[in-house]
Image 1 (cartoon, helix red, strand yellow):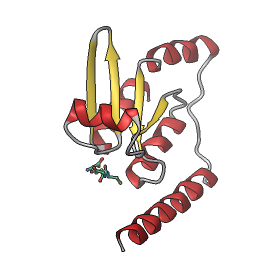
Image 2 (cartoon, protein in one colour; image 1 turned 90 degrees about the horizontal axis):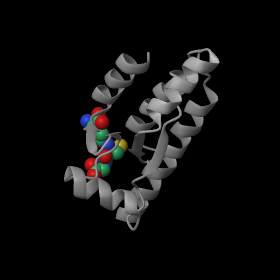
Image 3 (cartoon, helix red, strand yellow; image 1 turned 120 degrees about the vertical axis):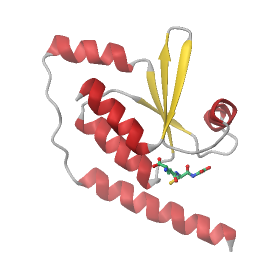
Image 4 (spheres, protein in one colour; image 1 turned 45 degrees about the vertical axis):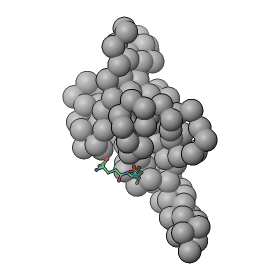
Length: 124
Ligand SMILES: N[C@@H](CCC(=O)N[C@@H](CS)C(=O)NCC(=O)O)C(=O)O
């Protein structure tokens, strides 16, 4: 039963992800040097996520619209290093979670609304 529910949830998530991929986004356009500057800043940001999680899909759409090259990390794989890291650093396996590295300091940001507000404010 648990396995069936998990399969249903994953299947539904994949459908939502596919529909989201089909719906076009109007991307922010930047000049070459401005985009390069933004790319340098986003090189220190990672999104810990599940592929089919609706909150993650929403966050990824914003990342796409803002034209940000943010690396995604799969935190769904139970044996994976990113899930273990997320749990160790935040005490939860909740996604989406933004990892922002500033020198030797690392900030972990949970909650979709907070993540979106942060990205909009910094890169919108
Ligand atoms: N309030 C959170 C909810 C996020 C949420 O429920 N994420 C689910 C996946 S869709 C999750 O992390 N589940 C795994 C867990 O909580 O360990 C947000 O808005 O980001």
